[in-house]
Image (cartoon, rainbow, N blue to C red; front, side, top):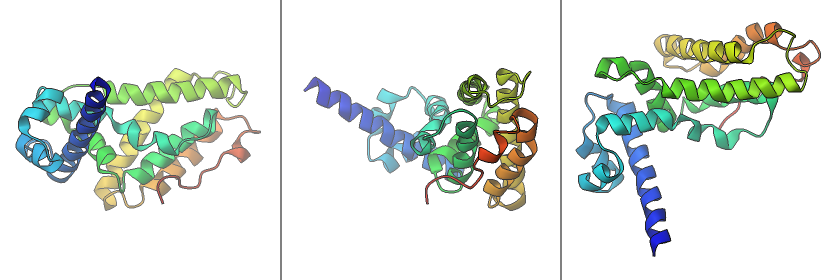
Length: 205
């Protein structure tokens, strides 16, 4: 019985996250009310408060849930995995409300009084791990600092998606992401690694 209750709680929390993401994606933080989130999820407001203490709390959870939209599509290692994270991210931003809302909230959070860098740090840490694996495999040029490159890529991806959003609602974000890598890879990857890196778009078809 206890296990069933735990599983039900996990399912309810995920339903609430998805519902919140769809509301935040469509309406933004200010115009999204907890009652709208609960209604979309098919639960009571009381149930929502059981899982999240406030609208700010569920917004932070949405921001931090971004990797859920990407991890199922990753099956590579090292430098290729780093590239794949951004390729899948670019594709999924076009179709996944959970990821799209997480990105929107992360960028706009200062406008509703939140200053939480957790989601950016999550990506930085994931990317740094890929780069450390790449270094151990001999894929990186001598002197390349995984921590510094990871932080730069998080910043670069943030800028690329913001620019693409303004220009054409991110329609060409996958292509812009590939061009970003065409510029960056020669500065971090060994000459023997470069030809092996696949830059074709990745993500849900």
